[in-house]
Image 1 (spheres, rainbow, N blue to C red):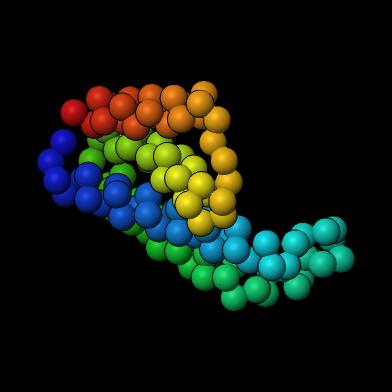
Image 2 (cartoon, rainbow, N blue to C red):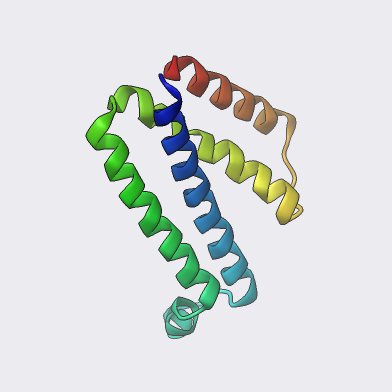
Length: 116
């Protein structure tokens, strides 16, 4: 795989994880407690910005799919799980067990092998 597909998928992954982080921030500030509070949650600025990032990620993904092999670029999206878990650890002070660390290493290694 050349640098261009890797770069496109990396930006796509960062947009996806960025959207998840913004959604988590939004829902931490205004928890979804039921259908009654859905309107207030959906109008949170962080939630809306997360949706925007997801929209941009989708457009970038359409571009990637139109030009590169699905069998090469799709496995690289599993890096979103790795970056997302590390973001939870660093930004939200979540913890990871030894088995979760092993899973993240396997995901990263598998994605790199599939991208070759």
